[in-house]
Image 1 (tube, rainbow over the protein chains, first blue to last red):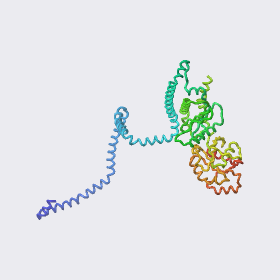
Image 2 (cartoon, each protein chain N blue to C red):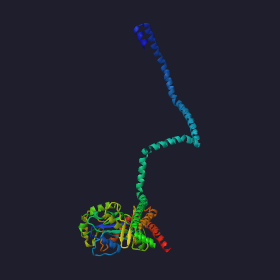
Image 3 (tube, one colour):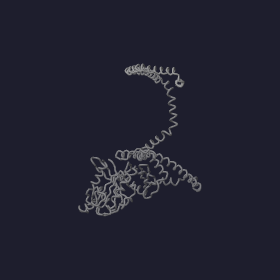
Image 4 (cartoon, rainbow over the protein chains, first blue to last red):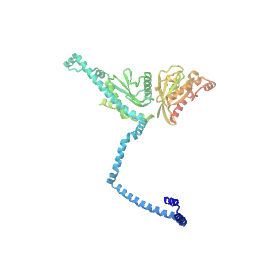
Length: 321
Length: 161
């Protein structure tokens, strides 16, 4: 363009004519070339699908061959365990590591929710299983502490009343503790045992040494008395544990969805009370894990049979022996 | 056989114990002895070949239902709310009482019973019906035994449905 400007500025006619000729020749060339280009374009348009197909086909065949080769290689890799392990292990380890690092963030909430839901759904069943175990542990610990305290007091009393000790030594008489003397004089006998649904007062099962009045009614009345006392003296988490009348006592052991009432005759010492409580916890742990809400005859029969075996058969067998 | 707990409740002197005695022992006594605390008894009934054991709790009457210990209602499958057709004071709070009972035992079937129907003429009974804010399910007479058996049978049927 600069050269063309120079020529025009110089005003050299010869050169200007040369430029004009060149430009004319370009037009001429364009006129001649355009139809040829148009023809080629037309030809290409007509043949394009066929040509395109052949190009794509070639490309696909190449790709297919490559894929087949890759698959064969992968197949061989999978078939050989060690080779596969060598390849996969680092990836798996990486993922495990990633999971470990991200677990609290990614899964903790979901898992916790799932556990919470499961616990909520089977709350009653879990509590029925846990309560006897917990109760036994607590009772054992308290009993042990009391036993130690009692022994310390006994030892203190014995040393204080040394004359009694001397008397015993001279005549070979071993003095008994107050509790032991009382227990010997008036033996505790389990007369009846009832397993009662806590809220409704419906009888889940019962066993007795001798036949008494309708046990469903007794269970209902126990529950009514219990409910009345607990409602009337609303102390936080306090429950009725003992009903006494004359020489009879009804010991109540509370569990989550049921309670066990034991009618006994004779005097009962703290140690005996603990023994009965442990026995009740053992029974609950063994036999009362799964109690449905709707009570029918089969449940009552099963529990009653087990109560009879557990509380009366053994004692009767011991007595007859 | 299935077992179900039923509560008999309502104001004092409406005839809860009389209905209880009529149903269980088929006895009626004109003498009025107030119930102290609660009295429990049971009766088995047969419904469509199935035996249902009903453990009935006859609760001491209270003017207002919220005076009854909450724990009495726990685990109950049925509540029978009884009022005296001859004493308006025993049904003037019927709506609020029923609402309270429904709240106390969600799963329980509540039956509203107008007792002592033997003491009123059919016209008088219609008058009472017209002024009740909550309709009765059945009217009974512990004295004549009218509808007493039907009341407990209808509850038993409802338990099996």
